Image 1 (cartoon, rainbow, N blue to C red):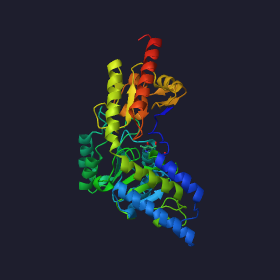
Image 2 (tube, rainbow, N blue to C red; image 1 turned 60 degrees about the horizontal axis):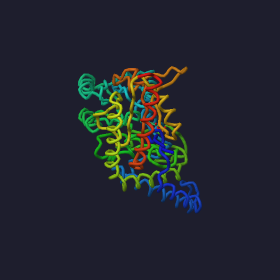
Image 3 (tube, helix red, strand yellow; image 1 turned 90 degrees about the vertical axis):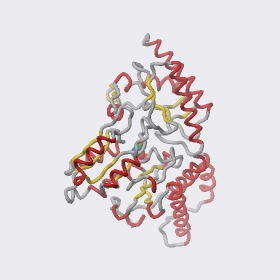
Length: 385
Ligand SMILES: Cc1ncc(COP(=O)(O)O)c(C=O)c1O
């Protein structure tokens, strides 16, 4: 079996599995906020995790707020900055056309609460158009409440120029939030070099147990709790922390940090895989081919062949990938992200996403290459191409 849907959710990393087996057998279990000694022990352990994560992510441990994952983190940032409605004439949210639904839906919600949403154009490369962004900033800077542009796209893996985006926001006194869900754990990320005011991460995207996550905030005073409760996380996120999830996140990110030099090798394997497929199928299209991309993401289409058909063929060979099409009533559509970069339906409906991480090796890529070659040959014949 080849699991190649790491951008959807990662399996537990081997270090996390090893840690968990021991951890579940020996305990301890307790509420980290309890006043007894077991509670204190749990709290001490959780704070150690916060320090480990801060070291790997290039921030102060005091800048990390634990939560349940990125969707919550994204809602929390929007709630904190926008929920009171526009203040001091700041009624514009600047975003991109390639954001995850969690950001898109926050923008839609706050559009109903008095905000105007301005969407930066996306270039055919899958990268946001910095000239268009600069134009929006120049024209509207006194009215902008928030800029929100992701760091790496979940479908295409294309990496956005977030340091430049953050610098322009910073120079104009504007808050910059970046959805770093896909970037963290698949690239080396340092918050203190990112020019971001807020970043988020989800445990199940980095090899840890699903159900925990974090926000990194440059200035915690900008956050307001949207989950009321017992004052946990400095009163900024109520609810007992998922301490085992947090522990696995620290183990996973520490392990990623120690192995991150493997990313360069993975990139070479991915490039060879793409080159071989393109050699065999010159009509195949790799989305974001020439753009900076996550080392281990390939989004590929053969014009005219449906992505779901390819996915089913691959699954029949025990290879698990996804498409990016939103399907309704069996009418597959080119995803919003691909539409934003001008991809036409014959390609947009044909994509499959192959995503791995530092686990990738030559054998895995070779299995995928063989299976994809067979799938394209079979489907081409069926379509009489
Ligand atoms: C870019 C991006 N942002 C946010 C999310 C939401 O993460 P979660 O489902 O862990 O809350 C995802 C998950 O797919 C994602 O890929």
